[in-house]
Structure formats: structure tokens, C-alpha cells
Length: 254
Length: 254
Image (cartoon, rainbow over all chains, first blue to last red; front, side, top):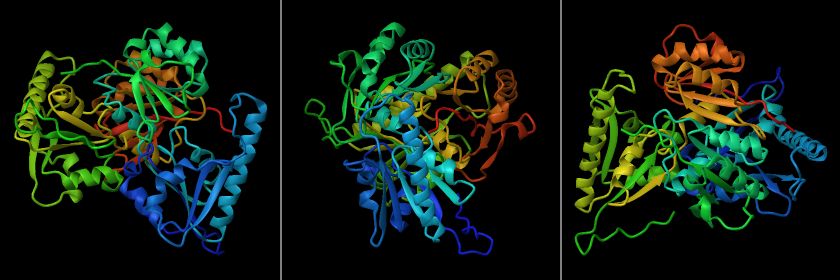
């Protein structure tokens, strides 16, 4: 947790350090005191965004920006939903992360630090991880934990999730229906993320697993436009990407 | 997320509100901006502690206390480890949570608010949940999400945990060895919490599941005295209660 001195590269100019900063689920007040400090100290602030859209991460963090910083937007080349297993998707994203890592590396090589903003917690399904694995070892990389999107949803839904010996399963709705149904049927508590276009498949899996009656649907938890309702009352087949299903545990309660 | 006016109880004096405040994994800087504000505004600050020990929650939050507050320590009656399924344990804890809820309710009934400090995230295996279920409905109860203990450990261990479609299983080491081994063998990523006296059992389960070589042992993550090492290098059968084992996922990485 202590700051280490920047690493000297064989007598060359001192390299900058990268810090991945978890921003929490969306409410700017759910940013940690440490993250707020790091953002305020940052001279170069990087963030991911979809091309042509406002960066969600930047919006959360903006109130903590100080003066005299520069921004390094990393714009995803893909704006429509493509199947995760499509070869084009994988190669396009791999190129994007490689190019983003190189852009950050160029700043670090000039001896300047970079703060990379991350929604939620950086190490839970975070885009930051793709930069981390590419730059760790070459540069000093620090990570500031954040409130995860799912913790934001638990509080928004006012829903205790795991009691005593409960087992919690966290999974993306991008999994196939059989896997979702089997996992939902064999866990005490569950969080299913990234609903989006996978909603109808998740509903079928929830029904097969017999957990619909105690499940909760959370749309944009701890963000503007938050909606919370029993899963069974969610109508239609549409759900935004920033939505989750929660199945609370029912374990030991003294 | 908006503050609601305190509820009037059929024309009687206005009741106070309870807020459960997640404090994060241990580093006081990993408290959220919202939690720091709520703690500073609190007039009555409640927290759990083991009798005769310093409250860990109080230590994390103390720097955010303002003046003119009163403290409401809730002291666990049990200081040694008792088996979770022992009838004495369950009835003793049930009485303790009931009495704690009544002490908090007495303050709320006088029209004063209570802030209850919670380590980690309040709704993930948190003691706060036992108070929440006893007072919700009778009083206004709010919850402020926090950085979970496990997220603190991911960052401390510098370990990306879940990629792409990875399934994450979170479970306490209090489960029996067969369950631990079976779950570890059938998940992409795992977090095992509350090691304590369960460490030798967990080691056997890890070995049976074939995940020892990629597991990490984190002791007091994001707290003073933090220790991180490959699970395979952890010697001895002793581990503190505040220790975790991480099995990182290895999923899709563009």
C-alpha cells in the first residue's frame, strides 16, 4: 500500500507509473477517498469509452479532477454487439488493447504517470486487466480497489446476499442457457451480470432452475435511472448492458 | 440514493434512521467518499467488536469521526471459535443480535439516527445483515455499499480475477472438505474466505481440486501486516480469520 519510488530503467530517464483506479458502481460518492486523491493528483487521465459516447468512467470521476491534467481517451472500435466468440471480435479487441497499452506506455516512457479510470472494481471483469497484463513488469503498475458493480446493486436493492456458509456464484449472462440453469440450480446465491441481449436466455435459465420467485432485477444499480423490481415482474425481452439479476442466499441466520 | 424524510410513526415523535456503512477491507483510505461523509455526520456510531478487543471497524472509521458523537459498541459474547453448527453458538448469537437490534432501536425511537459501521461490504457475509432484517420495516434503514474484503485482496495480490465468461465462486472455508474440493474443481475462479482454523482442510481440498499451483494466499489484505504468497508456499496449519485464498480465472483475453 506504500508508494514505491519510480523504477529507473538502467540509468535512463525515470519511468512513469500506471495506476488503475476503481471508481465504484456509478454514484460519484461511492468513489473511495484514495481514488479521489489519486484522481486529483493525476496529470494524465486515461479512460475507456465507446466511440461517439460519453465515457461512463470519466463522468463518475470528473468531480475529482484538479487543474492542469491531460486526458487520454481510449475509444473502443466496436459499438454494436458482436458475439464474443466471433473471430473478428477477438482480433479487433486484441488490437485495440495492444494499441491502448502502447499509447499509455508512450506516456510512461516520458517519465509521466498515468491514471487509468475503471468502473467498478478493476480486477472483476475489468477492461483495465487487459492493460495490466500488457504493461506489468515493464512499468510500475498500482491498483486501487473499488466498490464492485454488484455491491452497488446489493445496496440499491436493499438485499442481503450471503449468510453464514452460503456459496455465491458470479457469472455473466453471456454463458449458454444450460450452464446458466445448472449453475443457478446448484448455488445458494447468485449474481448474473451483463444481461443486455442475453435477457430472454437468462429468464429461461432462471425458470428451469426454479429461482425466479426469489430473484431481483436491478437496472443501472447506483446510477442515474436506477430501476429495481422482482425478476418475475420484469416485462419484455430488453435489458441494458448495465443490468444484473440477483438471487439472494437463504443460509444460516442466528 | 436520495435521502428520504424520516418516517412519522402515526403522529408520534419522528423516528431516527439507521444507516449501515460499508468501510472497505481495512485501509482507511479505501472508505468511500459517501461513507466518510455519513460517518462525519453521525451522532450515534455503533460497531461490533469482540469483548476485550479493539473494534476493527472503529479503527478503520475513526479518522472520519467528527465531534459530539456518542459510541454504541456491540460486544460479541463469544471470543473463542465454536463450531457453527453447535446449538449453543446459534442461540447465543441469536440472543446477541436480538439484544443489539433492541439497543439500536431504543436510540431510533428517541428520534436519533444511528450509523452502524461494517467491515467490507455490508451485504456480503456482514454482521449488519442480522440487524437489517430485524429493524427493516420498523425503521428507515439505508445501506452504503463498500469495497469488499475480497476486492481489497485482489488489488493487494495484484491479481486480475475474472476474464470474459469466467464463473467466480465465493465461499467460506467453513464448508466441508468434499464441498470445497468439488466447488474448486468446477469453477473458473474462486475466492475462499474465513480461513482461520479451516486452513488444513482447505489445503486438502485445493490439492484434490488440482488448483494449488495457481492459488494465492492473502493474509490481512489491504490491512496492516499484509502478507501475500503463492498458496503452495504457505507453511504451517495456522491462518488468521482475516485471510483468503484466491484462485484466479484464466478465461478469454483478447
